[in-house]
Image 1 (cartoon, rainbow, N blue to C red):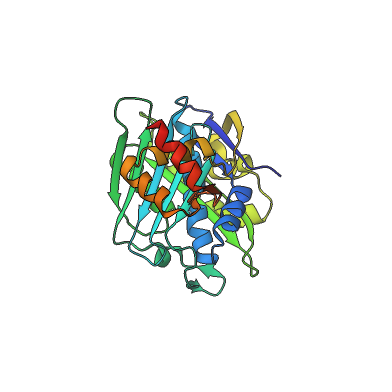
Image 2: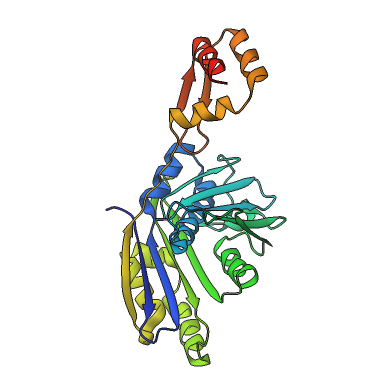
Length: 292
Protein backbone atom coordinates (compact mmCIF):
# COMPACT_ATOMS: atom_id res chain seq x y z
CA UNK A 1 0.00 0.00 0.00
CA UNK A 2 1.37 3.43 -0.96
CA UNK A 3 1.75 6.13 1.65
CA UNK A 4 -0.67 9.01 1.44
CA UNK A 5 -1.72 12.17 3.20
CA UNK A 6 -5.22 13.56 3.68
CA UNK A 7 -6.28 17.12 4.41
CA UNK A 8 -9.63 18.21 5.70
CA UNK A 9 -11.65 20.34 8.08
CA UNK A 10 -14.20 19.74 10.81
CA UNK A 11 -17.84 20.23 9.85
CA UNK A 12 -18.04 23.50 11.80
CA UNK A 13 -15.04 24.98 9.95
CA UNK A 14 -13.05 25.70 13.10
CA UNK A 15 -10.35 23.01 12.80
CA UNK A 16 -7.90 22.08 10.03
CA UNK A 17 -6.78 18.44 10.04
CA UNK A 18 -4.01 16.48 8.32
CA UNK A 19 -3.43 12.74 8.62
CA UNK A 20 -0.76 10.53 7.09
CA UNK A 21 0.27 6.95 6.54
CA UNK A 22 4.09 7.08 6.30
CA UNK A 23 5.05 3.42 6.69
CA UNK A 24 6.79 2.99 3.34
CA UNK A 25 8.77 6.23 3.51
CA UNK A 26 10.06 5.33 6.98
CA UNK A 27 10.92 1.82 5.80
CA UNK A 28 12.91 3.24 2.90
CA UNK A 29 14.75 5.70 5.14
CA UNK A 30 15.63 2.90 7.56
CA UNK A 31 16.85 0.75 4.68
CA UNK A 32 18.99 3.53 3.17
CA UNK A 33 20.59 4.64 6.43
CA UNK A 34 20.63 1.19 8.09
CA UNK A 35 19.25 2.65 11.29
CA UNK A 36 18.93 0.86 14.61
CA UNK A 37 15.43 0.85 16.20
CA UNK A 38 15.71 4.08 18.21
CA UNK A 39 17.15 5.97 15.22
CA UNK A 40 14.43 4.52 12.98
CA UNK A 41 11.72 5.75 15.35
CA UNK A 42 13.24 9.23 15.72
CA UNK A 43 13.96 9.74 12.02
CA UNK A 44 10.57 8.23 11.11
CA UNK A 45 8.67 10.61 13.36
CA UNK A 46 10.59 13.59 11.95
CA UNK A 47 9.93 12.48 8.36
CA UNK A 48 6.23 12.05 9.13
CA UNK A 49 5.97 15.52 10.66
CA UNK A 50 7.98 17.10 7.85
CA UNK A 51 5.72 15.56 5.21
CA UNK A 52 2.59 17.03 6.78
CA UNK A 53 4.21 20.42 7.39
CA UNK A 54 5.60 20.61 3.85
CA UNK A 55 2.24 19.75 2.31
CA UNK A 56 0.53 22.44 4.38
CA UNK A 57 2.58 25.20 2.71
CA UNK A 58 0.99 24.82 -0.73
CA UNK A 59 3.66 26.94 -2.41
CA UNK A 60 4.66 25.64 -5.83
CA UNK A 61 8.34 24.62 -5.85
CA UNK A 62 8.60 25.55 -2.18
CA UNK A 63 10.23 23.35 0.44
CA UNK A 64 10.33 22.94 4.19
CA UNK A 65 13.29 21.79 6.27
CA UNK A 66 12.82 20.39 9.77
CA UNK A 67 16.04 20.19 11.79
CA UNK A 68 16.27 18.79 15.31
CA UNK A 69 19.39 19.09 17.45
CA UNK A 70 18.79 17.82 20.96
CA UNK A 71 22.24 16.87 22.19
CA UNK A 72 21.30 13.17 22.33
CA UNK A 73 23.25 10.25 20.84
CA UNK A 74 21.50 10.52 17.46
CA UNK A 75 23.03 13.96 16.84
CA UNK A 76 21.20 16.10 14.29
CA UNK A 77 18.07 15.00 12.43
CA UNK A 78 17.45 16.81 9.15
CA UNK A 79 14.35 16.26 7.00
CA UNK A 80 13.35 18.12 3.85
CA UNK A 81 9.86 18.08 2.34
CA UNK A 82 8.66 19.40 -1.00
CA UNK A 83 5.33 21.15 -1.47
CA UNK A 84 3.51 17.84 -2.00
CA UNK A 85 4.84 16.16 1.13
CA UNK A 86 7.54 13.96 -0.41
CA UNK A 87 10.44 13.83 2.02
CA UNK A 88 14.05 12.86 2.49
CA UNK A 89 16.08 12.81 5.68
CA UNK A 90 19.33 11.97 7.42
CA UNK A 91 20.69 11.63 10.95
CA UNK A 92 24.23 12.16 12.24
CA UNK A 93 24.42 8.78 13.97
CA UNK A 94 22.11 6.07 12.58
CA UNK A 95 23.46 3.32 14.86
CA UNK A 96 22.38 4.55 18.28
CA UNK A 97 22.02 2.01 21.13
CA UNK A 98 18.68 0.56 22.17
CA UNK A 99 17.00 2.62 24.90
CA UNK A 100 13.51 1.73 26.12
CA UNK A 101 11.09 3.46 28.50
CA UNK A 102 9.88 -0.03 29.32
CA UNK A 103 10.06 -3.35 27.41
CA UNK A 104 8.64 -2.81 23.95
CA UNK A 105 8.50 1.01 24.16
CA UNK A 106 11.42 2.86 22.54
CA UNK A 107 12.60 5.99 24.36
CA UNK A 108 12.83 8.47 21.49
CA UNK A 109 13.23 11.42 23.86
CA UNK A 110 16.44 9.96 25.30
CA UNK A 111 17.74 9.29 21.79
CA UNK A 112 17.04 12.84 20.58
CA UNK A 113 17.76 14.71 23.81
CA UNK A 114 16.30 17.98 25.05
CA UNK A 115 19.41 20.18 25.20
CA UNK A 116 18.91 21.92 21.88
CA UNK A 117 16.45 23.24 19.36
CA UNK A 118 13.83 22.40 16.76
CA UNK A 119 14.21 24.62 13.70
CA UNK A 120 11.87 25.02 10.74
CA UNK A 121 13.10 26.63 7.53
CA UNK A 122 10.36 27.44 5.03
CA UNK A 123 11.41 28.26 1.47
CA UNK A 124 8.34 30.04 0.15
CA UNK A 125 10.05 31.11 -3.09
CA UNK A 126 10.58 34.60 -1.71
CA UNK A 127 13.78 36.58 -1.32
CA UNK A 128 14.58 35.13 2.11
CA UNK A 129 13.36 31.91 3.74
CA UNK A 130 11.28 32.00 6.91
CA UNK A 131 13.18 30.52 9.87
CA UNK A 132 11.60 29.67 13.21
CA UNK A 133 13.27 27.93 16.14
CA UNK A 134 12.26 26.81 19.63
CA UNK A 135 14.02 25.02 22.50
CA UNK A 136 13.17 21.32 22.58
CA UNK A 137 10.65 20.33 25.23
CA UNK A 138 10.61 16.52 25.37
CA UNK A 139 12.61 15.28 22.36
CA UNK A 140 9.65 13.08 21.47
CA UNK A 141 9.20 15.26 18.33
CA UNK A 142 5.39 15.32 18.27
CA UNK A 143 5.25 17.42 21.45
CA UNK A 144 8.00 19.65 20.12
CA UNK A 145 6.22 20.24 16.81
CA UNK A 146 3.10 21.15 18.79
CA UNK A 147 5.13 23.68 20.80
CA UNK A 148 6.75 25.07 17.65
CA UNK A 149 3.41 25.96 16.09
CA UNK A 150 2.17 27.53 19.32
CA UNK A 151 5.29 29.63 19.90
CA UNK A 152 6.65 30.45 16.44
CA UNK A 153 3.46 30.60 14.37
CA UNK A 154 0.92 31.36 17.12
CA UNK A 155 -1.32 28.52 15.96
CA UNK A 156 -2.85 26.19 18.58
CA UNK A 157 -1.88 22.74 17.32
CA UNK A 158 -1.85 19.10 18.33
CA UNK A 159 0.65 16.81 16.60
CA UNK A 160 0.80 13.06 17.20
CA UNK A 161 3.39 10.83 15.54
CA UNK A 162 4.04 7.11 15.70
CA UNK A 163 6.57 4.61 14.37
CA UNK A 164 6.27 0.96 15.41
CA UNK A 165 9.51 -1.00 15.00
CA UNK A 166 9.32 -4.80 15.10
CA UNK A 167 11.74 -7.12 16.91
CA UNK A 168 13.61 -7.77 13.66
CA UNK A 169 14.15 -3.96 13.32
CA UNK A 170 11.66 -3.70 10.44
CA UNK A 171 9.05 -0.93 10.40
CA UNK A 172 5.57 -2.33 11.04
CA UNK A 173 3.58 0.91 10.76
CA UNK A 174 4.18 4.64 10.80
CA UNK A 175 1.95 7.69 10.58
CA UNK A 176 0.43 10.58 12.45
CA UNK A 177 -1.90 13.53 12.47
CA UNK A 178 -1.76 17.27 12.90
CA UNK A 179 -4.79 19.35 13.87
CA UNK A 180 -4.95 23.14 14.13
CA UNK A 181 -7.53 25.48 15.57
CA UNK A 182 -8.62 28.37 13.37
CA UNK A 183 -9.31 31.85 14.81
CA UNK A 184 -12.61 32.11 16.63
CA UNK A 185 -12.87 28.45 17.62
CA UNK A 186 -15.14 28.29 20.70
CA UNK A 187 -14.16 26.60 23.95
CA UNK A 188 -16.51 23.68 23.34
CA UNK A 189 -14.57 22.77 20.19
CA UNK A 190 -11.31 22.84 22.15
CA UNK A 191 -12.85 20.64 24.85
CA UNK A 192 -14.17 18.19 22.25
CA UNK A 193 -10.74 17.87 20.65
CA UNK A 194 -8.97 17.37 23.96
CA UNK A 195 -11.38 14.56 24.83
CA UNK A 196 -11.06 13.11 21.34
CA UNK A 197 -7.27 13.00 21.54
CA UNK A 198 -7.43 11.21 24.88
CA UNK A 199 -10.10 8.83 23.63
CA UNK A 200 -8.23 7.95 20.42
CA UNK A 201 -5.00 7.07 22.23
CA UNK A 202 -1.64 6.30 20.67
CA UNK A 203 -1.19 6.63 16.91
CA UNK A 204 0.83 3.41 16.68
CA UNK A 205 -1.96 1.42 18.33
CA UNK A 206 -4.53 2.77 15.88
CA UNK A 207 -2.26 2.10 12.90
CA UNK A 208 -1.46 -1.40 14.12
CA UNK A 209 -5.19 -2.05 14.41
CA UNK A 210 -5.55 -1.18 10.73
CA UNK A 211 -7.07 2.29 10.99
CA UNK A 212 -6.55 4.58 8.01
CA UNK A 213 -5.56 8.25 8.36
CA UNK A 214 -9.19 9.17 7.69
CA UNK A 215 -10.42 6.85 10.43
CA UNK A 216 -7.79 8.12 12.88
CA UNK A 217 -8.87 11.71 12.30
CA UNK A 218 -12.47 10.59 12.70
CA UNK A 219 -11.60 9.07 16.08
CA UNK A 220 -9.86 12.26 17.20
CA UNK A 221 -12.52 14.70 16.00
CA UNK A 222 -15.47 12.56 17.11
CA UNK A 223 -18.82 14.30 16.89
CA UNK A 224 -17.24 17.37 15.28
CA UNK A 225 -17.11 15.36 12.05
CA UNK A 226 -14.53 15.76 9.27
CA UNK A 227 -14.86 16.73 5.62
CA UNK A 228 -11.87 15.52 3.59
CA UNK A 229 -10.85 17.82 0.77
CA UNK A 230 -7.60 16.43 -0.61
CA UNK A 231 -5.66 13.15 -0.78
CA UNK A 232 -2.02 13.13 -1.91
CA UNK A 233 0.33 10.17 -2.37
CA UNK A 234 3.66 10.83 -0.66
CA UNK A 235 6.97 8.99 -0.57
CA UNK A 236 10.62 9.12 0.40
CA UNK A 237 12.02 11.04 -2.54
CA UNK A 238 15.49 12.45 -3.16
CA UNK A 239 16.11 15.04 -5.85
CA UNK A 240 19.85 14.49 -6.25
CA UNK A 241 21.28 14.02 -9.75
CA UNK A 242 24.66 14.03 -11.46
CA UNK A 243 23.85 17.48 -12.84
CA UNK A 244 23.23 18.88 -9.36
CA UNK A 245 26.40 17.30 -8.00
CA UNK A 246 28.34 18.71 -10.96
CA UNK A 247 27.05 22.20 -10.17
CA UNK A 248 28.06 21.75 -6.53
CA UNK A 249 31.58 20.69 -7.53
CA UNK A 250 31.96 23.70 -9.82
CA UNK A 251 30.98 25.93 -6.90
CA UNK A 252 34.04 24.65 -4.99
CA UNK A 253 36.18 26.90 -7.17
CA UNK A 254 39.22 26.54 -9.41
CA UNK A 255 41.82 25.99 -6.71
CA UNK A 256 40.09 23.11 -4.94
CA UNK A 257 39.12 21.39 -8.18
CA UNK A 258 42.70 21.73 -9.44
CA UNK A 259 43.96 19.99 -6.30
CA UNK A 260 41.43 17.18 -6.79
CA UNK A 261 42.49 16.73 -10.44
CA UNK A 262 46.18 16.72 -9.55
CA UNK A 263 45.69 13.85 -7.10
CA UNK A 264 44.86 11.72 -10.13
CA UNK A 265 42.35 9.54 -8.27
CA UNK A 266 38.64 8.90 -8.82
CA UNK A 267 36.56 11.36 -6.79
CA UNK A 268 33.31 9.88 -5.40
CA UNK A 269 30.53 12.14 -4.12
CA UNK A 270 27.84 10.51 -1.97
CA UNK A 271 24.36 11.97 -1.43
CA UNK A 272 23.66 12.19 2.29
CA UNK A 273 19.94 11.59 1.82
CA UNK A 274 19.87 8.51 -0.44
CA UNK A 275 23.47 7.21 -0.38
CA UNK A 276 23.74 7.36 -4.18
CA UNK A 277 27.41 7.67 -5.17
CA UNK A 278 28.40 9.82 -8.14
CA UNK A 279 31.92 9.02 -9.35
CA UNK A 280 34.10 11.57 -11.09
CA UNK A 281 37.40 10.66 -12.77
CA UNK A 282 40.36 13.07 -12.91
CA UNK A 283 39.36 13.68 -16.55
CA UNK A 284 35.83 14.59 -15.43
CA UNK A 285 37.23 17.11 -12.95
CA UNK A 286 39.50 18.65 -15.61
CA UNK A 287 36.44 19.09 -17.82
CA UNK A 288 34.73 20.90 -14.95
CA UNK A 289 37.72 23.22 -14.66
CA UNK A 290 37.22 24.22 -18.29
CA UNK A 291 33.68 25.38 -17.41
CA UNK A 292 34.84 27.78 -14.70
